[in-house]
Length: 138
Image 1 (cartoon, rainbow, N blue to C red):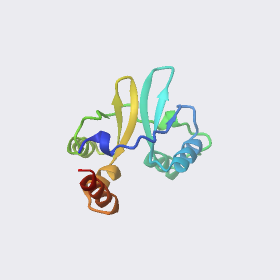
Image 2 (cartoon, rainbow, N blue to C red):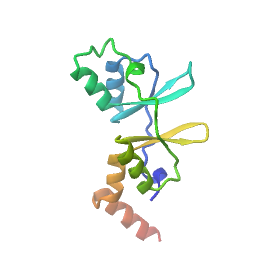
Image 3 (cartoon, rainbow, N blue to C red):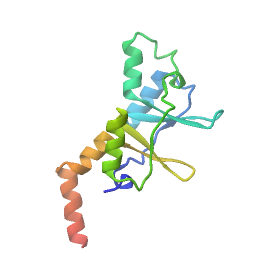
Image 4 (cartoon, rainbow, N blue to C red):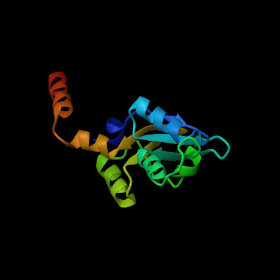
């Protein structure tokens, strides 16, 4: 299975000036664990995750004053939609992170997470439904 088959296309994009509270609210509303941070001034693409926000709040920082840009990881490992899930899992394991931004052409088209990979690999309701649909179509 490929990254394009597992990735979430519900991509939340925010700017570096968003506060951590705003970022957390948007992430919660979209039910995602990460947001892509696009800096129009530097044309940079970064990521902020729920863990980044948790670490800031846990350190006593004010989520209304702290900006996403101050907590964004800019040294990002990107995935291609044609990567296998094994390649994505290996990149995550090697880098010690749980999300990969998926790039195709000009920009981000999705995010793949450890949860997405597990959902595809572990037998369960969704996997069973996909197999049954595939058998019925084939």
